[in-house]
Length: 545
Image (cartoon, rainbow, N blue to C red):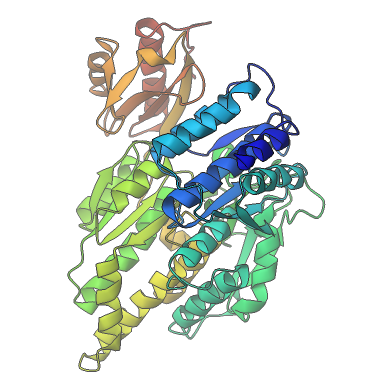
């Protein structure tokens, strides 16, 4: 077939380094940019096949999110704007790791296995972040798509969530919105303005927020969006990419791990600030109090604020819809207790990784999910959206119900349901704080996090650890879970779990307890048991104090 000859010729321009093996993970492929040229070409091929198989537009995003600037990566986006299906993650890994001479065979195997109609049109949209390597790597994706006879539209510089949004809009014939970056700005800004109209007495102070753009694509796009917001939000932008390095001493991951503000952003007492990550799909809030103490509001606090707001509106609107919050084992125990005991919201635990949370959240009328790192969103079932819309149109309901229904309808429009989105999440949070007349301190005070500690233990082979119950309990090695249970029993409000890293031979240890000292001691004691029972490598863990 002429198609395969073209692939063969083009692939010679994007050769695979012999012996290099990479794995398609939760975040796609991610490594040093210099190792990715052949991967990008091959993901262009795979996206074209996926498009033909699903008879839909497929997205390819060139980004390495919160990684250092010299890294890069690629993620495929499925028809409804969600992450690519698990079976095709496998194909991505197979295709990426096929040696140069075996590429065509690997490609034909996928076509055969999936019964792909090669006469079907293939249509791929792509976007990229601001890394210096992203332009060249995007060209490799384009070569992959076109060599297999697919059509490709390059949206250029976009945030990851914007490309997810575009893919969903195109495959729903515009029901989700207009499938352009401008369509994204218009939909979100309009919903935000409608919501904040219901909070009429906002001062300029309440409208103001400091945003750390991680020197990435989010800063660029937030600048473009500002005019659409009509001064309803006044943004002071820091780390806007004009002079700093992407994700260096700034961005959501840096702030979360270091527990301090990003470089170049001075905090004023009580003032709201937030940080995006490199591709703008995560957000973290923070502030300093009068004693200059730094306070972080992570994904747990965000999920709690949004789910509380939605639950209150459902009650006011008289809508019987099932709302649930999906967390991972890393969620702070205080947040779980507050949601279950105070707010009477169901909480479910899923394995670490956004795709696991997303799938679980789809089981409810309204599913709120956030990882502690600030990556998350809210999913509304089609039936829930329809009930909210019908109620908002109903002329025979009282004013309180009408207002609640309209607020719910605009909140649905403000949320990017395809994927976690820093810009959308920020606007949702700002709207909720405005409507509730709440300061960032009042939000933070809704519950107090339990002190916690995360450690990692080097082991010879991480596969000796197997877990169950959404990674909260260890099945192997024998005796480890019993030892953890015994240690946890020595402390008040305590909890601990271990799980193997997805990428390196380390075991991650998480512990929380009533005091920081107890959390630290428990984490150390659990680390010691992991070292002894799971084949520790290198030096034995040392106490933290």
